[in-house]
Amino acid sequence: MATLMVMTFSSCCSQRPSISLVHPTKKATEAKNTNWREGLNSSLFVWWTQPPLMADVSEVVKRSMNINEKLGPRLKAAAEQNAILRIGWTNAGDPVPKNGELGLCPALPEGARLRALGVLGSWVAAFGTGGSFTIQGDAGSFLGAANQGTTIVCERMAGHYTGYHMETGSITVLDGTGDDTGACMSGGTLVVRGASGARIGGGMSGGLIVIHGDVGPDPGAGMTGGRIVINGRCPSPPPGVVLRPLAKKEVTEINKLLDDESLHVPSDAVCLTVQEGLLVERAGFAVSSGDLGQVGLLNEDKAPLRPYQTVDTVALIGLDEEVQSLALPLPMLPLVENGTTMNAGKDSAAVIGDVLNRHPAMVSQSPRAVDVLLIGMDNLLDVAKELPSAGGFALDLDRLPAMNAEQLDGLLVALRSLAKERVPVIFVEAISRIQALHTKAAYHGAQLAMARIEDGSGISEAASLPMTGRSKKEHLAGTTTQSGLLLGFSASGHDLAVLMASGVDVVSCAAPMAETEDIAYWLKGTQDDLGDELRRVGLSSIDMLDRKHLRALDHETAAVSGLRLAGYGRPLPHWFAR
Image (cartoon, rainbow, N blue to C red; front, side, top):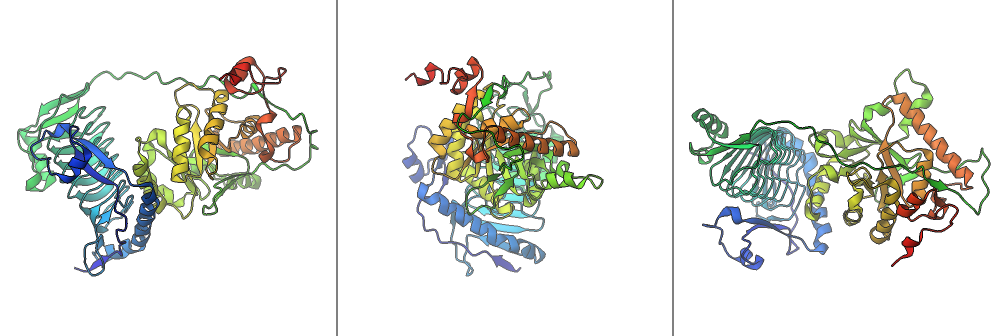
């Protein structure tokens, strides 16, 4: 059989992200140097990830991107020749194991065959639609996430969230997995030989999980469908999950599906399934109590501009020279479910198409070339299809599992390998976690950090202004990362002017209507209103807006925002208290 090989990189850094099983009573140094796993209760294991040194991070990311870049054009040719692409060997066949590379081989196509050697990082072989991927070594978290047809085999351990949100395909891990294995699966087959961590199959709605080993606490938590078969010790399941023996017919069916005698399920294995119960409608979280109507805009130093004078309302997403910036006619990124809504119809006036075509939007489906694809759990399975046509992407961190720096790097490598070159990246997260959001965005080089107002905390728009300003000064000063707000209401020109004056760079909000022509009229009207606000206060550009132009029009707004109270001329005294 012909074999194609990928050029590899020498392992020049001694410390890379590595995954080990650690007993809580043993020191990490002992765990790394002794083989003490055999005979211990696997339910006591916790997953420990050795973080890379900061100096190594950019190098690991660059190496990972380079591997994906080289793989891209070879995958199709290798599939046509029925050849295997190899990662971790030289052209002469000598082993050069990988050590920490992450986000490798996203969206594997039908017919692709890959084999990797070494310890790989997070988000390996994610978004696959076919082919096969074998790892001779360990894998990090999110192995095979959003799988839709790829056959994945990991010959040693895998980290947390193995098979996350898998729809079809199969994943086999031969030496144990971490927490949340098979979380949010809707289909496919996941087989683990060895111990697995907490919340196995959490939130799954379909598919089959087979564990030949002990599992951690809360198995099947929140599951609404599917089966979890456990050939080992299993703690009591949480409410809503039933533990029962397997029927003979099920044993035969599962073993036929596995098609590997070494992984066959014995008759005394147990099965976790959903217990039918009452469906109770959830009440939801607190919402913001107001808008920005009680914040005034004035300029004591300048006279109004002429009503016909041109003003600059253009904003950019992406200030780095290395990024292909997105130009916004006004500092607003409308939130639209489907990008096709922004396409003018054949019978629409030319001016409608002109307004829509030059205005990017943030969409969840069918992005245009200028749109930003908002990525969350709901559309994770569509990423491989949708992302290549988008002008940028936004990670909805509230709608994805919590990730550490290495895991987030892995996801970014995978997504950047699928996206167009040099597109801007946006992080979206709750306003109540704005400091963590700004820290992450600056560390990972995101172009925009956008805080969501409606996060369930009830924090108002006025209260978010000082929170944003303080965090921006502390975490984004000296970087090219911009700050943004995702509002819970449709912004007006006045709202945009107030937010720009408070230091926000870009605003996003849902369009107040769903029809294409109505959205065009709303965008044009908002731009005109913003221009009128600028002319009224004597400013020719949104870049000239500053906090000194803002006034709180009532006592409550002044109390929560720290703005000067109109008439009083100063912030309220408690803002000066130490």
